[in-house]
View 1 (tube, helix red, strand yellow):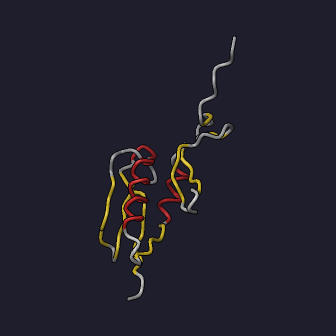
View 2 (tube, rainbow, N blue to C red):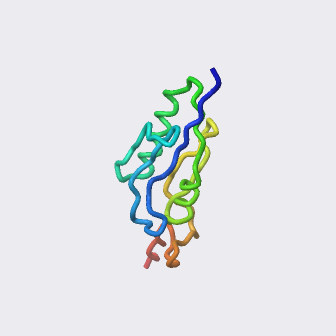
View 3 (cartoon, one colour):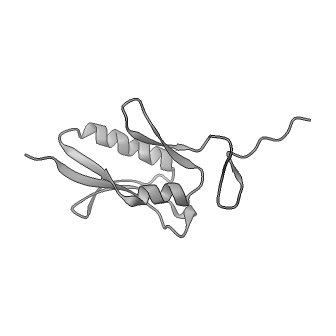
Length: 112
């Protein structure tokens, strides 16, 4: 049997960065898995764990909502783990700003 392809997306409203709801996997336009704890990092980790448990030929493609989420919602980025998978983590590199010019992570108070 040929591998089957499902798709992962991030469920949120592009016009509203505070509207994050969860991470969803669909197959044939039907939801087959969903994680909606309100914590994007935890939900993405749950998706990866779910994907690891299903290594029987299910390919999972990434929909554009994942990239859009990273652009629309300040404070998140993807890194590659030791297995070459993309992992969602909070932005922790100095010098990055949100859409309002606020540093991510917030600048530390100067020592006085």
